[in-house]
Image (cartoon, rainbow over all chains, first blue to last red; front, side, top):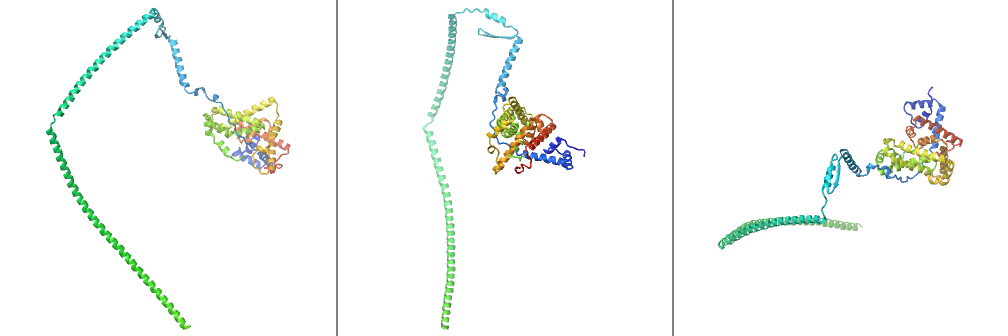
Length: 284
Length: 210
């Protein structure tokens, strides 16, 4: 037997981590080698002694992990949009710098120029003499205000006139229409009304007559049916009653028959017992 | 050697929990801590034979875990990854202790013995108090024997014997070859055997407890 397992194989076998052919080989070696077998037993014994150490019970305390470390800066809400806005602004500034864009806001003027063309316009701005005094400005304001006011008043007047004229025409049209209608209504005379009422009356009379006729025939048939039904019902009731009476009579008859038989039996038994007693007495 | 408890099963099937925790779900992180705290604590406790140090290491480990989970690529490697963190913190604490030399293991041992009587802390499932005492005495002796091993051997023995990691996983934790792990285990067990024989502890002498 040339095979001699080394310490690694010993350990792997001891902890059941040797498998397949290697395990078989090791087991064969143990079988043919009592010393090795004893050694293995010692190891197993040691393991069983070691198992006397049991786990200690412990309760996990709360683990506090500060949030700051775990959270990346990108996780902050809106940061992405803010960052993108900032980036685009930077880009605009950069491009502006490259193309020589100049933006100025001076004397109520906003100027945006590319390629350094803003200077001449600044000169123009400088040429305009700013010599207006406060009173002049006030006058100008007043003037423009007056102009405005007069313009507004004019438009108002126009509108008013238009409105008034349209209202007047509408009124005229409407009143003429109403007059016409009134006149037509008054034209209808007494005769027409009288004939109308007469026709209404005759119609009503006819309707009432028809209604009465119709209802009378219907009532007649209904009452006839009702009477027939009632006669049938009475007939039925009578037969039922008769049957009941018959039944009762029959049962009474049966009962009396039974009673008769019973009394007969009793009588015969009494008579026979009396007879027996008499015979006994005579014997004695 | 350990019967599979519900906790063990939960630990084995915590893949979805790990995935959730990795996405920053604090609830899932909390659950992971609950699941693994006992294991890491017991690893630390056996490594130092000291409750405070074990708690310290466990807390640091789980804080690191919560922070570092996002960087964990493979959820199936979670176990070895977690133990790796724990081992690193254990080594760090051990280094600090060596530097200060203020308390030796004997001191730790004695203080521990005074502070927490075993009848209070260990789980009780034997009715006989005498047997209980013997059992806890044996456990103490074994713990002491573990402390006599070198740090390298101790880590491996605890992870293999008490934490039930595979040799492959231990190799991953320690970033060494599987053969080196097995070799350390071998010498670790050998060392333990010698220590125990020296103290006259063998299967026969403690047979009534097993």
